[in-house]
Image (cartoon, rainbow, N blue to C red):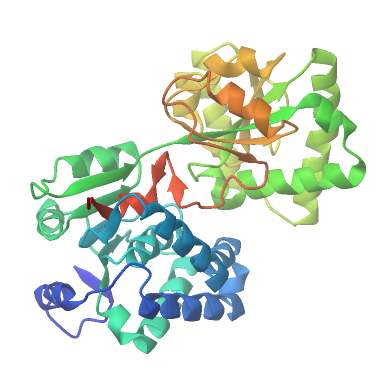
Amino acid sequence: MEFLIPAATKTPEAALDALADARFAPFDPRVTAFLADFSARMLADPVLRAFPELVALGYWFRPAAVAALAARHRALSDTALLRPRGVVLHIAPGNVDAVFVYSWLLALLCGNRNIVRLSRRDSAARSALLALLAVVLHAHPEVAAANVLLSYPRDDSVSAALSARCQLRVVWGGNDTVQHFRRVPLPPLSTELVFPDRQAWAAFHAGAVCAADDDALARLASNFHNDAFWFGQQACSSPRAVLWIGESGDIAAAKRRFWPALTAELSRRSVRDEPAELAARIVAAHRMAAADEMRTATPLSSWPLRIEADSFSAAARDAHCGYGLFIEIERPDLAAAASLFRDADQTLAQFGFDTQTLRAWAATLDDRALDRIVPLGQALQFSDRWDGHDLLLAFSRQVVIG
């Protein structure tokens, strides 16, 4: 077991035992001061500013945003007193470096002590982030005493020992990771929150794309890039299927406008396609073609690679590799698209639909289909309500008084 924060100045057992002495109220001033320092340093750090996901993280925890979270926490406390759960064990994902910080710091804001198990997969963003966290936590020793960040190879005995210490276990990862940790026992009064594999869509109103002027079309392409190409299309909220809504003529015209605009945006940003990603797309396309009736809308060597289909089938979902591969599906209206969505579908990033229409349509979906419908460009923006869970409540214990 490798202790990342704090540095290995104690035995693992002593460092973990020390968590018991740390106590914080929800939105404790010591924690909000730590977060203000963390956010300011992150947004000012030229190394970290090279990573857009880390800039977004620093912005998310700026003082004004934390104050808004505190106000919502107070509103939730009107019906029951919200108390910390105790020790929260976070199992961080390996594919998105910043996700563990949102989970961890929200739990900390709710007054919890935290053990964070990080993936052993390294990256430049992860290293820079951990270096900054070490500096900021050193400046806030009381907050540092309430948190342990560590890493270890898969070892059920270690996971069981850590799980025995927690009142809440939070697992971010694929379905296999979730199923694996569900076999690791928890104390009887402890509970678990899991975030397994999820998938995402983009939806375009074809008429709105056709009506967009050149500036609006360029913004649309930029927003789609931000949603789909960050993290190599590997995040659970990165769109992998594109739903076109409208008459067939409008859809064809919209595609003729949108896809060249996206190509221009990729060129403007100097984004490069990698040979390994090209190979992965081609293999995925062949796997999909072997299982379903679909046709390529672009040559196999294209980036992005577009495949037209009638649905986002289980076989296509399983074969999809990301890296600029998109399944295109057409429907005349939203009502005709409702049956496309499954319980694995988390996010729909949309353009051209009004909120009232979307609310009415969402009420017709299967009970577990879609947890988020957001404007295009906001698919990767984290929220304190995620995968259908209110995290301020999930990280709290409700005490009813009356």
